[in-house]
Image (cartoon, rainbow, N blue to C red; front, side, top):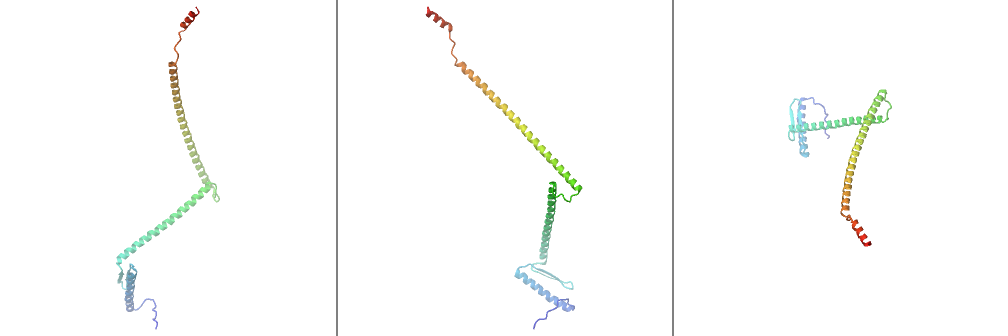
Length: 204
Protein backbone atom coordinates (compact mmCIF):
# COMPACT_ATOMS: atom_id res chain seq x y z
CA UNK A 1 0.00 0.00 0.00
CA UNK A 2 1.51 3.26 -1.14
CA UNK A 3 1.84 6.20 1.18
CA UNK A 4 -0.48 9.07 0.41
CA UNK A 5 1.31 12.20 -0.79
CA UNK A 6 0.72 15.18 1.46
CA UNK A 7 -0.24 18.38 -0.25
CA UNK A 8 2.15 21.18 0.63
CA UNK A 9 0.05 24.09 1.83
CA UNK A 10 -0.60 25.99 5.03
CA UNK A 11 -2.19 23.88 7.74
CA UNK A 12 -5.29 25.64 8.97
CA UNK A 13 -5.71 23.64 12.17
CA UNK A 14 -3.55 25.25 14.83
CA UNK A 15 -2.94 22.06 16.83
CA UNK A 16 -2.00 20.06 13.73
CA UNK A 17 0.19 22.92 12.59
CA UNK A 18 2.13 22.97 15.89
CA UNK A 19 2.58 19.18 15.84
CA UNK A 20 3.83 19.26 12.23
CA UNK A 21 6.15 22.15 13.05
CA UNK A 22 7.68 20.27 15.98
CA UNK A 23 8.22 17.07 13.97
CA UNK A 24 9.59 18.83 10.87
CA UNK A 25 11.85 21.06 12.96
CA UNK A 26 13.40 18.10 14.75
CA UNK A 27 13.83 16.28 11.45
CA UNK A 28 15.47 19.34 9.87
CA UNK A 29 17.89 19.77 12.76
CA UNK A 30 18.70 16.05 12.66
CA UNK A 31 19.49 16.24 8.93
CA UNK A 32 21.66 19.33 9.55
CA UNK A 33 23.58 17.51 12.27
CA UNK A 34 24.10 14.50 10.00
CA UNK A 35 25.33 16.75 7.17
CA UNK A 36 27.74 18.52 9.50
CA UNK A 37 29.10 15.24 10.86
CA UNK A 38 29.37 13.40 7.54
CA UNK A 39 30.78 16.27 5.45
CA UNK A 40 32.57 18.37 8.09
CA UNK A 41 30.33 21.29 7.17
CA UNK A 42 29.76 24.34 9.34
CA UNK A 43 26.02 24.79 9.69
CA UNK A 44 23.71 27.17 11.53
CA UNK A 45 19.93 27.06 11.45
CA UNK A 46 17.48 29.54 12.95
CA UNK A 47 13.76 28.89 12.89
CA UNK A 48 10.98 31.10 14.22
CA UNK A 49 7.64 29.49 14.94
CA UNK A 50 4.35 31.14 14.08
CA UNK A 51 4.18 32.31 17.69
CA UNK A 52 7.60 34.00 17.41
CA UNK A 53 9.61 31.46 19.37
CA UNK A 54 13.23 30.99 18.20
CA UNK A 55 14.76 27.57 17.63
CA UNK A 56 18.35 27.24 16.47
CA UNK A 57 21.02 24.68 15.70
CA UNK A 58 24.70 25.19 14.94
CA UNK A 59 27.58 22.81 14.41
CA UNK A 60 29.82 25.27 16.31
CA UNK A 61 27.88 28.38 17.32
CA UNK A 62 25.28 30.46 15.56
CA UNK A 63 27.24 33.69 16.20
CA UNK A 64 30.43 32.23 14.73
CA UNK A 65 28.63 31.07 11.59
CA UNK A 66 26.92 34.46 11.21
CA UNK A 67 30.28 36.27 11.52
CA UNK A 68 31.78 33.98 8.91
CA UNK A 69 28.81 34.64 6.67
CA UNK A 70 29.23 38.42 7.07
CA UNK A 71 32.93 38.17 6.20
CA UNK A 72 32.05 36.15 3.13
CA UNK A 73 29.53 38.79 2.07
CA UNK A 74 32.11 41.55 2.48
CA UNK A 75 34.64 39.64 0.39
CA UNK A 76 32.02 39.04 -2.29
CA UNK A 77 31.06 42.72 -2.34
CA UNK A 78 34.71 43.79 -2.61
CA UNK A 79 35.30 41.29 -5.40
CA UNK A 80 32.27 42.39 -7.38
CA UNK A 81 33.16 46.05 -6.81
CA UNK A 82 36.70 45.40 -8.04
CA UNK A 83 35.45 43.56 -11.11
CA UNK A 84 32.96 46.33 -11.84
CA UNK A 85 35.65 48.98 -11.41
CA UNK A 86 38.00 47.12 -13.73
CA UNK A 87 35.28 46.81 -16.36
CA UNK A 88 34.40 50.49 -16.12
CA UNK A 89 38.07 51.52 -16.22
CA UNK A 90 38.74 49.27 -19.20
CA UNK A 91 35.71 50.71 -20.98
CA UNK A 92 36.86 54.29 -20.32
CA UNK A 93 40.41 53.55 -21.44
CA UNK A 94 39.14 51.82 -24.57
CA UNK A 95 37.02 54.84 -25.47
CA UNK A 96 39.93 57.21 -24.82
CA UNK A 97 42.22 55.06 -26.96
CA UNK A 98 39.68 55.05 -29.78
CA UNK A 99 39.26 58.83 -29.56
CA UNK A 100 43.03 59.43 -29.51
CA UNK A 101 43.50 57.09 -32.47
CA UNK A 102 40.81 58.94 -34.38
CA UNK A 103 42.35 62.31 -33.52
CA UNK A 104 45.76 61.07 -34.67
CA UNK A 105 44.32 59.89 -37.97
CA UNK A 106 42.55 63.20 -38.43
CA UNK A 107 45.81 65.05 -37.80
CA UNK A 108 47.23 62.95 -40.64
CA UNK A 109 44.36 64.07 -42.85
CA UNK A 110 42.37 60.85 -42.53
CA UNK A 111 38.77 60.19 -41.48
CA UNK A 112 37.71 63.81 -42.03
CA UNK A 113 34.28 62.83 -43.25
CA UNK A 114 31.47 64.09 -41.07
CA UNK A 115 33.44 66.98 -39.52
CA UNK A 116 31.74 70.36 -39.63
CA UNK A 117 33.43 73.71 -40.24
CA UNK A 118 34.17 74.41 -36.58
CA UNK A 119 35.67 70.97 -36.07
CA UNK A 120 37.84 71.39 -39.18
CA UNK A 121 38.98 74.83 -37.97
CA UNK A 122 39.84 73.35 -34.57
CA UNK A 123 41.79 70.57 -36.29
CA UNK A 124 43.60 73.16 -38.39
CA UNK A 125 44.60 75.10 -35.28
CA UNK A 126 45.91 71.91 -33.67
CA UNK A 127 48.00 71.16 -36.74
CA UNK A 128 49.39 74.71 -36.78
CA UNK A 129 50.30 74.56 -33.09
CA UNK A 130 51.87 71.16 -33.58
CA UNK A 131 53.85 72.38 -36.58
CA UNK A 132 55.02 75.41 -34.59
CA UNK A 133 56.28 73.14 -31.81
CA UNK A 134 58.03 70.93 -34.35
CA UNK A 135 59.76 73.93 -35.96
CA UNK A 136 60.77 75.26 -32.55
CA UNK A 137 62.20 71.89 -31.52
CA UNK A 138 64.07 71.65 -34.82
CA UNK A 139 65.55 75.14 -34.41
CA UNK A 140 66.65 74.35 -30.87
CA UNK A 141 68.29 71.15 -32.06
CA UNK A 142 70.10 72.97 -34.90
CA UNK A 143 71.36 75.65 -32.49
CA UNK A 144 72.64 72.95 -30.14
CA UNK A 145 74.49 71.31 -33.02
CA UNK A 146 75.96 74.67 -34.14
CA UNK A 147 77.13 75.48 -30.60
CA UNK A 148 78.65 72.02 -30.30
CA UNK A 149 80.52 72.52 -33.60
CA UNK A 150 81.77 75.93 -32.43
CA UNK A 151 83.06 74.47 -29.19
CA UNK A 152 84.74 71.67 -31.11
CA UNK A 153 86.33 74.23 -33.50
CA UNK A 154 87.69 76.26 -30.59
CA UNK A 155 89.15 73.11 -29.05
CA UNK A 156 90.81 72.22 -32.37
CA UNK A 157 92.28 75.71 -32.72
CA UNK A 158 93.71 75.56 -29.20
CA UNK A 159 95.15 72.13 -29.87
CA UNK A 160 96.69 73.38 -33.14
CA UNK A 161 98.30 76.35 -31.38
CA UNK A 162 99.68 74.07 -28.68
CA UNK A 163 101.19 71.76 -31.31
CA UNK A 164 102.75 74.74 -33.12
CA UNK A 165 104.32 75.94 -29.88
CA UNK A 166 105.72 72.48 -29.21
CA UNK A 167 107.12 72.36 -32.76
CA UNK A 168 108.75 75.81 -32.49
CA UNK A 169 110.35 74.94 -29.18
CA UNK A 170 111.72 71.76 -30.70
CA UNK A 171 113.14 73.56 -33.73
CA UNK A 172 114.82 76.19 -31.56
CA UNK A 173 116.39 73.53 -29.39
CA UNK A 174 117.63 71.74 -32.53
CA UNK A 175 119.27 74.86 -34.00
CA UNK A 176 120.95 75.69 -30.68
CA UNK A 177 122.40 72.20 -30.43
CA UNK A 178 123.65 72.29 -34.04
CA UNK A 179 125.47 75.63 -33.62
CA UNK A 180 127.14 74.35 -30.46
CA UNK A 181 128.41 71.26 -32.24
CA UNK A 182 129.78 73.31 -35.22
CA UNK A 183 131.75 75.65 -32.94
CA UNK A 184 133.50 72.83 -31.08
CA UNK A 185 134.70 70.93 -34.24
CA UNK A 186 136.05 73.90 -36.40
CA UNK A 187 139.86 73.92 -37.45
CA UNK A 188 142.30 76.43 -35.79
CA UNK A 189 143.26 79.42 -37.96
CA UNK A 190 146.44 79.05 -40.13
CA UNK A 191 149.45 81.47 -39.94
CA UNK A 192 149.65 82.75 -43.54
CA UNK A 193 152.65 85.05 -42.87
CA UNK A 194 154.88 82.23 -41.66
CA UNK A 195 153.97 80.17 -44.70
CA UNK A 196 154.78 82.97 -47.07
CA UNK A 197 158.13 83.58 -45.31
CA UNK A 198 159.19 79.97 -45.59
CA UNK A 199 158.33 79.97 -49.29
CA UNK A 200 160.40 83.08 -49.93
CA UNK A 201 163.44 81.66 -48.06
CA UNK A 202 163.30 78.52 -50.10
CA UNK A 203 163.37 80.36 -53.35
CA UNK A 204 166.54 82.35 -52.36
